[in-house]
Amino acid sequence: MKIGLSGGIACGKSTVLGFFREAGWQTVDSDAVVRELLAKDAEVKAQLRTRWGETVFIDGAVDHTAVAKRVFGNEGDLKWLEELLHPLVRESWLASIAQAPNANWLVEIPLLFEKRLETRFDLTVCVVSPPDVAADRMVARAYTEEQIEQRRKQQMPLEEKMELADYLISNAGSLEFLKQQTTRLIKQITTH
Image 1 (spheres, one colour):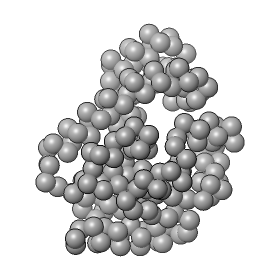
Image 2 (cartoon, rainbow, N blue to C red; image 1 turned 180 degrees about the vertical axis):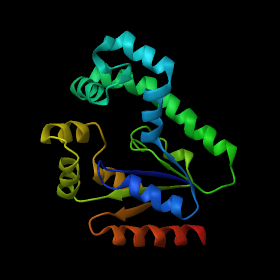
Image 3 (cartoon, rainbow, N blue to C red; image 1 turned 120 degrees about the horizontal axis):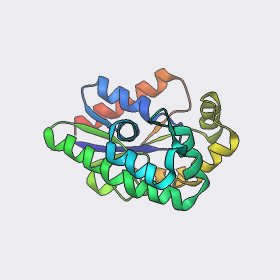
Image 4 (spheres, one colour; image 1 turned 120 degrees about the vertical axis):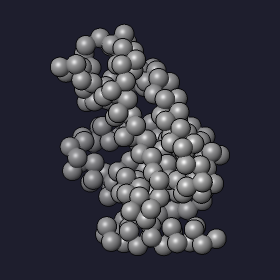
């Protein structure tokens, strides 16, 4: 079984991914793959330097805040960065699955539906939260209102993702409630 996991910003995708991992599933966190590429891939760093120079580096390491400021303030820069990173991320999760093709896999891809990757999976799951709850979580992570809005504008509206997904998980309550829903979903899809 291969599941594509998506959802809105700060809706709890990483937490749900952790619950699947605890239940014995193989998982891929696309955001973690991106962080690793930015930290360790010499070619990716070289491309960033060619595009933006040293303005997006601090002591040789990629400055994620500086990169975010550039890409969320400039559509051309965002498109360029996605064209650089997305094929590498896709290659990474496909390679992971290829190593254990008969295992149960959950691959978290924030832009699953935007990039039309849902056809690569047996099922899709969307994690949803009320906009104010998600915004509160982002504010707690030190995002400004402007940064929250910039990021939301780059994603398909959550309502559309909900329509496209095979299953929904609501993260509007407690962590325990989220875990119960995830556990119930895992049971449901593995017993059919």
